[in-house]
Image (cartoon, rainbow, N blue to C red; front, top):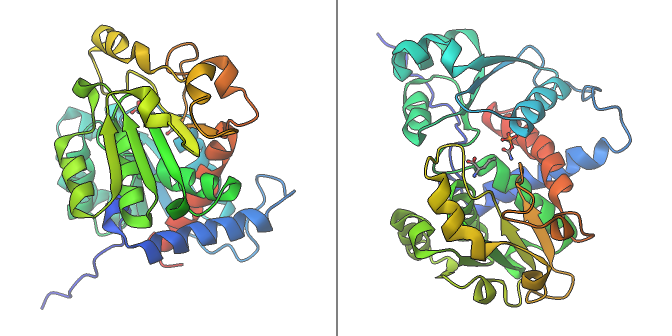
Amino acid sequence: MTVPMSIPKHFLDISDFDATTLNGIIARSRAMKDARKGCPKGLRETDEPLKGRMLALIFERPSTRTRVSFEVGMRQLGGDTLVLTGSEMQLGRGETIADTARVLSRYVDAIMIRAAAHETVTELAAAASVPVINGLTNLTHPCQVMADVMTLEEHLAPLKDLTISWVGDGNNVAASWVQAVGRLGGRLRIGAPAELAPARGVMDWAKAAGADVSLTTSPEEAVAGADCVITDCWVSMHNTDSASRHNLLRPYQVNAKLMRLAKPNAKFMHCLPAHRGEEVTDEVIDSQNSLILDEAENRLHVQKAILLHCLGA
Ligand code: CP
Ligand code: NVA
């Protein structure tokens, strides 16, 4: 007789969750952040809710924030991590994703993966018997946008009451923003060249979800009256067409002139790493209204709450 296995609680995309679950994760992040104010970064939570748990971190692409925030977060929760580089694993020599998932599930309690292709994450999750967390793919970056929503709400108001402007490449981070607005409310105004607008499937999902998401090729129109302007690099890790992207995206630089069209004192966000002088000027990214470091910090807090959600702790 085979024992039925329970389905692991993955964190693959924001669109997989309802508003109650997403808001619950953000509320827990905020509570953990508040409770740690002034504490040393390495201090473990007193109850060590993930004591004895092991998290594998697989990187098929480089990372600073994702790696460090998951490693520190898991330790603060009392658990441990091990970092695996895709190219150093048998995965890089053709071992299947499904076999990798089944084997890792015998060693670790959860897997975070930054994958070159989104299908790698979904295939891993389909075969794993432990939770899988999406740490960025070519299509989405849900942990980043959860941290960004938390950050905006700390500084401004609930997302449902805000108008957000995305300027530039309609990339993986933009797609997760569309999903966040679809689930949590708010208005998202995307200003992108037609060639680099979010994929048709992303916009179709937004329409079906009743999300208030609009698309224009005019950066000025996109930022008009916005509470926050967000951008990202012009060439993501999976892109190869660097020269044509620079040409297409040059008119979408977020500079002081563009910011003046948003609300007075509108916030600026960027997931980092930034290419200063390209998608954003120093004047904007270093301004009083730039939230970049809070976004980076909140990766730590929100991912701890995601780990607790996935591991049922
Ligand atoms: N924002 C973000 O995911 O940064 P890293 O690529 O450094 O992890
Ligand atoms: N859009 C960027 C995000 C980096 C965190 C990329 O995929 O490279």
